[in-house]
Image 1 (cartoon, rainbow, N blue to C red):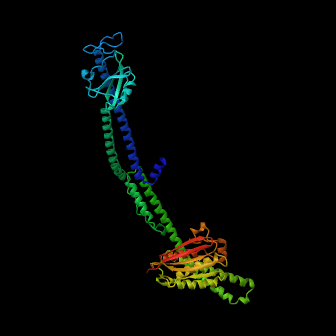
Image 2 (cartoon, rainbow, N blue to C red; image 1 turned 120 degrees about the horizontal axis):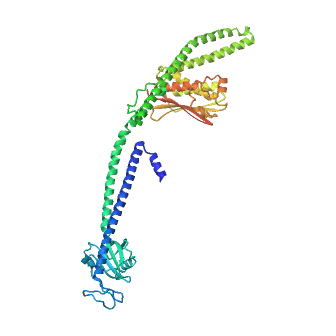
Image 3 (tube, helix red, strand yellow; image 1 turned 45 degrees about the horizontal axis):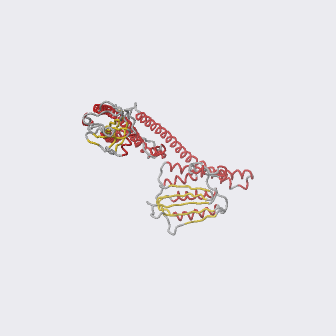
Length: 501
């Protein structure tokens, strides 16, 4: 039962729990009050009826004893007034209910040697069944009231039995029907009143709880609006605040804490955005400044290599290393400059680009650069075009193929697939390999800058860790997204681009 209640409450809102708790507590209180009133009234009415029964019993005994005479040697009283002994048995006692003025419905009976000699209900003679006679014969003549059912008298009675002066057992009873009727009416009234009270309490409690929790609802709405803001893109404007409530209440304190938290978040985002802006500016400025000296270094290196035959072998090898590293440094600078431009939101070209042609050209280049791999194409029968910057999209595909060649062993298969959805709203470009896969701990951060799947091998291969970051940045600049699914023997990068203009 408790588990069922907990399971039911677990799926309800705070408002629903409060209303349910309020109604449950009120219902419990009403049940306790109703039961207490009912039991107290029942005890009172029962005691009152028992007192009336004692008086009725006294009147009946007095009436019977008054009608009797002195005891004869045979043990039976001498009856006077026209009631002589006949056959050695005492005659029936006249109806004392009528004589003594008993209340309506009063039951009286006289038993001699466990045999009923007469029984009356008010002024009428009552013929008792065998079962009723057995019930009366089983009563103890101690004067204590007991509740019994008399079928012949048609109802439940509170009976009391005493011994008369002649040794007979005199039974007096009062009907329980009025008491039971009163209790039923009281129970019906309690159920009606308490039911109406619960209904009104539920309605008014719902309105009151709604009014009390309105500040929490405003906080929820504000938090929902904040979650919809593009905070990850550098937006630091948080104008949303919770309207002030009474700070002395729990809700008011929560509202103040919530507003303070939003202020701290806004301040932290502002500092982060300013730091990222300075970093982007530095990267862009550094890239611009480094391109000129790097071009000069490569020019002088090429000039010196024209007379490589006149140089000693160790110096010639040193010039070759300078040329290779300057070329690598130039690529890094170009990548940083591209990322800085994309971060700055510089617009890209928006011309129709044939993805199928890009896939064919990139696969041809990859086959020449990594002949140890198996390069496969999966193209649709019709060309797939998207609006975008052809040179940047070519770079995206080249980076994905280069990544597949570097991180899969020789003999691996790499499949380049191009497809368009049936509605023509988007196009997909995927690169799938059957290599060892990307470790799960790296999949969430693989598109971040300077992240390498295998640091040692990547450095040996000359990787800068910016290839996939450029893929993500260029795809996002085109309004698309790039997804990764990886497991052993299957790693797939899927670039989804909008096909509409």
